[in-house]
Image (cartoon, rainbow, N blue to C red; front, side, top):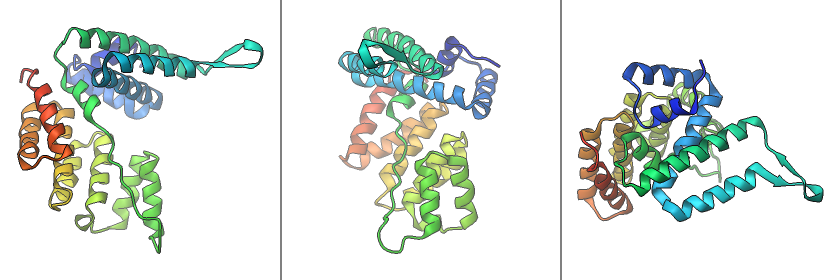
Length: 248
């Protein structure tokens, strides 16, 4: 099954039916190149709303330098076809997104998720007698090999309830492979620890946003906003303002 740029845009803007969306996501699971192209376009589209016109120019400059690189005697060479497609698609979506941004078109849940979501940065101490198995699963996580990470972590039978950072990493991994219910279970596990509660709630809110559950996302963000004046509370307030533009 082939998917053109228009089909990818329809997926990212939430214009596909439930059946079409499910089929598209199943295709991404078996087609790594398609998944990478969607991720590239998702990130670029989110970037345009986040940074605006000045950032757009700098992003285009960076892309230009990557696509056409200097060679001896003033000649140039193009990168491989995968990059060419990715860049062409990104440029097209950037231009569409920029027009939307200029026109103040209400964002979709998919667009807001792309804008606000960043993968959880799970770090572990590499000093002392760090468990070799823990190091191994950490490498899998850092390499975004989420399925292998989840499989091997589950086999270790760790008490994840006592390790909030690992619980957040598990939630991130399950969310990345489309198992959002399982992801939320781990985010809620991390929420039980006061030091990680706001971060865990933030990722819960984003998981609701990813699946289009706007009301649940709003309720969770309201909890974060009311708790304190931390960076998460500020981000929650900003995202709530954006969500107010969406009819739900």
